[in-house]
Amino acid sequence: MSKSFGIKSGILHTYKTIGFKSVCPAAKAKQLNMKTNQLVIIRHGESEWNKLNLFCGWHDADLSEQGAKDAINTSAVALRESNLKFDTAYSSALIRARQSLSIILKELNLCDLEVVSDWHLNERHYGNLTGYNKRDMADKYGEEQVQSWRRKYDVLPPPITADNPYYHSIRNNPSFKDIPPTEFPDTESLKVLMQRVIPYFENVIFKQVLGGRRVLIIAHGTVARALIKHIDKVSDENISTVNVPNSIPCVFEFNMETGEKVGKTTFLADENFLNEQIQKTASIGESNK
Ligand SMILES: O=C(O)[C@H](O)COP(=O)(O)O
Image 1 (cartoon, rainbow, N blue to C red):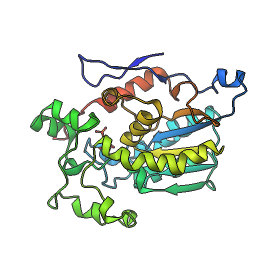
Image 2 (cartoon, rainbow, N blue to C red):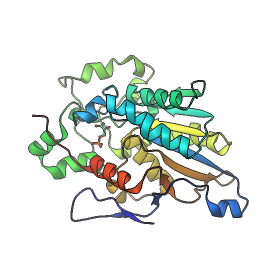
Image 3 (cartoon, protein in one colour):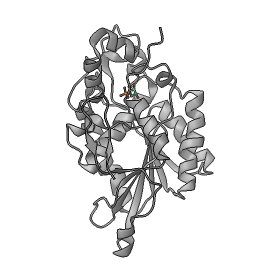
């Protein structure tokens, strides 16, 4: 199946490997008697700052009430209905991901599951855009500039400066105390984010997947795009058309011997709902004025 992931009317790119059916172990893998293992990635539920349409990045926003509900009714329900089981779970160090994970695990009666929270899975740092409304920024700098900051592979937002109202709370967040000062970012593009996410994924998470552990990752929009780009080998250009909505699980299946992906990348949601949520994520959204 192929699907369009356009963020603007006019040019629509096609990203062919994402499927929209409910998960099924790859039939071919079964036929070939191949040993496979699945990996599930979920973008956290709606945060208070998603709700207000603010650039969030490393600001530590809580889940909104709706986000907490979606962790139950969208994430946990889909995982349960697809009969997915887990041995371990990872989240970023940010509270919106940790809250989403703990709600999902509670709902699935998996409160004893081994959980790791690590800053390498944090959302991209949005630089000096942090705290600003996305529509207000589009009114000021133009939609094209804002979409390029949001979605282009190699475009850095302006670095955060000490006069940004969130500079100090981000720098002094106790959840980030173990980050080496030289690795603490002031801004990140998708390309720069991949330099921290992909080595962590390969060296820590993917080894476990190939060893047979069933892993759940609760992360962020840009982290999910980084993992999709890496796993599905999406080009630098086409990744700008990929938008990952909150709360909908995304499932990958791998050949445990070769590490190759088997079958389609699959979002566990009804196609109409998924498309609606993708459009919402792609959109610049509204001002709060
Ligand atoms: O950090 C943010 O603002 C959001 O998590 C992602 O926003 P985006 O969809 O504008 O990249």
